[in-house]
Length: 529
Image (cartoon, rainbow, N blue to C red):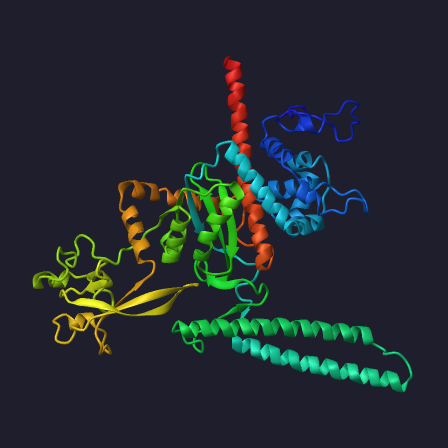
C-alpha cells in the first residue's frame, strides 16, 4: 500500500501569502516564442493605428498594439473567436504575459478586427519590408494560387429567383398590412384627440419590413442576373436555377474542396519561393481567381518596392490576357499552356505546310470531341495565313470580338474555300457548316507561343515542380493550424480584412521563428568562442 506522504507537494499553497512572489516575466521561459512575437511587434510603427483614436476623450484606451497582438497571436494558436480570445486573456499564461495582464473583452476584439482595415494593410507592408531586410523575401519567384473557404452562411440557407419572388410578395403583403394598422392607429388617435397609442412600435415594424424588402429585392436581382449568366452559357435556369445565399449575400455558391456545393469565398495568396512568406493576399467571390493575378504583381511592387522576377501559377490562370500583362511588366510567367501550333509527333508539323499530310498519317491527326483540332492547322506569320492538313491556304476573312472570362478579346477569323470534296471534310467540319472550316486567332496568340517555348525548357520544368510546395503550403497551415476553414465575418470587405489578419499572423510567426533561430545561433557561436 502506498504511503500517504508519497505524493509530491504543490509548489505553492493557494492561500499562502507570498512576500516575494515571482514576477509575470519570470513565468515565461526566455526562449518562448511569444517573446519573439512581442519583440517583432514592438518595433512596428503604430502611427496609423493611433490616428484612429480621438486622443483626449473618454478613458485612456488600450494601445492598439496590444489588441492587435492578441488577435495575431491567437490566430497562430488556432484561437479565432472573440470570446475565446477574451477567455485566453484571463486564463492562458502566454496571453497574460503578452498583454501584460490586460483583460480585453470579446466586444473590443470583435470591433477592433474590422475597424482597422487600412492600418492592417500598413502592418502587412511593414512586416514584408522587415522580412526583405532579413533576407527572408527575395522575390526571385513567387507562386499565386487560390483556395476555397466557407462563408458564414449555412449551405441550406440559399434561395433561387422563384423562391425570392414568393418571399418578396409575402413581405409586400405584410408591409401593406402594417401600413393599414398604422393608418388605423393614426385615425383612432385623431378622433380621441390623443397621440398615437403605439406609434413607435408600428414605425419600427414598418422600418424592419422595409429593410427586409430591400434585402429580398437585391437578392432577387442578383438571382435573376445569375440565371441570365447561366442562360448565356447554355444552362437552363428553369431546370437548374442559381442559388443565392441569404445570410451572407456577397458570398457565392461554389464547389467545396471537400465535395458538394455551399456559399463560399475564394481567398488568394501570392507566396515567395525562398522561405514561403505571403507577399500578397486578397479575396474574391468569384469561382476563378484569374482576374486577381495581374493586380497581385502590382500590389507586391507597391508593398515591397520591387516586382517579382518569376510568377508561377496553375492552368486556371493561364489566359492570354494575364500572360500579356505579365510580359508588359517584365515578369516571367510560368503556367501550363498548350500550343495551338503542331508540336513534334503531330503529322501536321511538316516542313512544307502547303503540302498535304500523307494519307497514311492522317488517322494520327489530333481530334477534339467534334472535329480535327486547331493544332492540325499551321500558321504562316509572314503571309498571315493558315494552312489546313490538306495544304490549302485559309486567308484572313474578318475580325470579331469574343468574351474570354472577364476580358473581351479581338479575334481574327481565317476561312477555307477548299472544303467541298475534301477527303477530311467529314472529320473537319461540323454537321451544319456549309461555308468551310474556320480557325480563329486572338491578339494573345504570340505571347502564348512564347510562354510555351519558355515552359518547354528543362529549367522551367524544374522550377515549376516547386509551385505546389510554394503556393499550397500557406493554405494548409492557415486551414489546419489556424483553423480558418470558415470565415467568421460576413460581406466581402470584412472577409478580405479577416483573411489579411490571418496572412499577417502567418508572416509574423515566420519572422518570429527566424528571429529565435538567429538569436539561438548567435548564442551558440558566442559560447563556442
